[in-house]
Amino acid sequence: MPEAVIVSAARSPIGRANKGSLKDFRPDDLAALIVKEAVGKVEGLDPHDIDDLLLGCGLPGGESGNNMGRVVSVLNGWDDVPGATITRYCSSSVQTTRMAFHAIRAGEGDIFVSAGVETVSRFAKGTSDHLPGTQNPLFDDAKARTAKTAEGASEGQSEWRDPRENGELPDVYIAMGQTAENVARLRGLDRKELDEFAVRSQNLAEKAIKDGFWAREITPVTTPDGTVVAADDGPRAGVTYEAISQLQPVFRPDGVVTAGNCCPLNDGAAAVVIMSDTRAAELGVTPLARIVSTGVSGLSPEIMGLGPVEATKKALASAGMTIGDIDLVEINEAFAAQVVPSYQDLGIDLDRLNVNGGAIAVGHPFGMTGARLQNTMLNSLDWHDKTTGLITMCVGGGQGMALILERLS
Figure 1: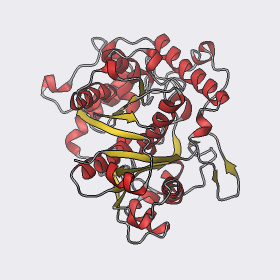
Figure 2: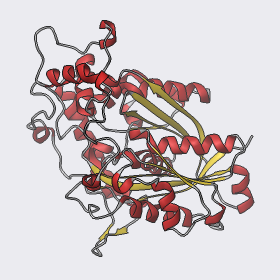
Figure 3: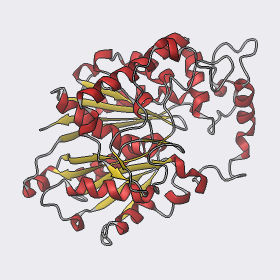
């Protein structure tokens, strides 16, 4: 059975939504640019030999509609390369890697592009999720319950309880910030530890930027007005706990989630090229990493932030590994309130976790993030001279996903 190996990776800088450096990029144009960059890094690869182009996008509507994966193939002049657009929200471009991994292991192809994009700045042109009157009315009571909870804790509501215990539907449409507050309430997390984690992310990212780590994985892009962008918008220098602690809660008056301890809204694209090890050998291509295993999990939509826990356990079990076998871990930092309990439950030491900073600093363009984390993990394993890496994340709707990589070069 052939192994699936990653042979190249590329990503754009990450821009702040609506006011940042990439706000004028269409998602399909940005994705096409980064996909072409990733493919171009593979010496001897004819793009027309690609078996499928799989593009992750969290909310594939508006400018991200019309099967954007196929649009990207055509934009790049690869009319004979099929394309598909995949959504599993925040893990969309881990899902595309999983699909390439499975296809290669099944012998149904040798060369795949796994990419991801999200341009929140362009959501004004439409998304897949926000058309009025499209949500199922069976969830109306659950939505009303969420709205009431968002007003602040009432007497007897000191912690989250699963509505299934009362025979009620959970709120599948719940805002992600409300799920983070639910997790914080369920786990008894205090504001101080979340702010301290956020400061850690920003400070580590600041150091990694100065050391040259992040520049190694970023492909500079030229915006429609001719500006060259070569760095992420999000990281801030000199972030302190004293400053972060002054921010007000965003989602509940009595909450712990602030603009300082969660990720911003962003724009960006990333891609990896995945081959069978046999085709890589035929082409004389040196693989960067082997895809070891993946895992996906489901849980109540109202506490989706704990999704990484079971997803990681599944990926580890599939690989025959334990968390102690993992050298470096990237948990996507959607919210400090979900990263903290996830790493604690999994027994991950902080000296292995998000060691270059995470999404609280660099950003989280939903569909891009899975492929961005693969870029970062490949970079980090090489930079720190480590072998095994775990990528994991929570996923909107009450899911988690995980991917384990083994460095080969």
